[in-house]
Length: 409
Image 1: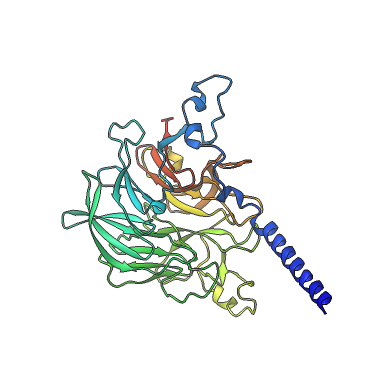
Image 2: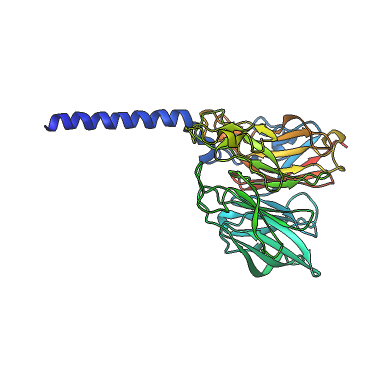
């Protein structure tokens, strides 16, 4: 009797190993760049010497490629995992550091393009992510979104300190997606993005997989838009004032499905997740009986399909001034980079070409070079564009913030 049991057990183990190997080969063999440490320190590579000033034989090649007329350098380093970038009312750059539970200020008082120091604005937080300022009653308020709460602080712009923390909203537990980001609508209401708790599922908490809306004091919380698996970052179009979001599609449908998305939000609308994706495509793997095919036809399709698993995060519109004329009101999107793909993709910043009304004209690379044959030098996360020809990009893998300047006026 023992021999048949041993044979059956061996077959089960062999089948399990074969399935695990096939699953890894199809979905996870491109995981390395996302998980492994950078093969080199990009802060040492982005030096004047690496950029050509030093002509010695040992000079390393400048790793990042930008369009003609643009330059990039390190603004701040050693930050851990900087994510959301914000400019305070005085013009100082603020960054959230979720892994350290901190929000920090990065002043550059001598304006040499390098942060003078790192000043802690707030600490002891639960993976802080989204931030936004609001002027109220003659005071500057700083909103900080943690995983399970949203709080408002009094902000001291002279000393870069947040104090008087006041919780105004409870938010659901993290699950699969823990980031929370915010934006104010033109009518003064506050949007809060809360991702799904899973890859694909039916949520038990009504707040998951939504963009929520509330009054600035946290009252009257309700759904603004639904069916959004993980609308990680938001930005308002400079002319139309519509809310644009990056949206990450589900995993485990192969290298090229489903597309990641850029969506334009409309209040009360459903964007399809978990039953559909992209241009109202029904997810037959999640809904094999097809019970929601008709529902998919009623959802809002993606405005722009992006390459699957590119992981779009921060997005920012170019202002009217300070940049080339043909960049006006175009959109930059940070592709954080894939993990659920056999061949890695993303790890770059792309330019979405738009006309002044936001009509889509095309996509092209803006900054590339983070992804190398030996691994990823970094992963761009958020983008902040100013109207003076400079922008800032956070990198939560390399632990740096970059400063990009348009030099060819």
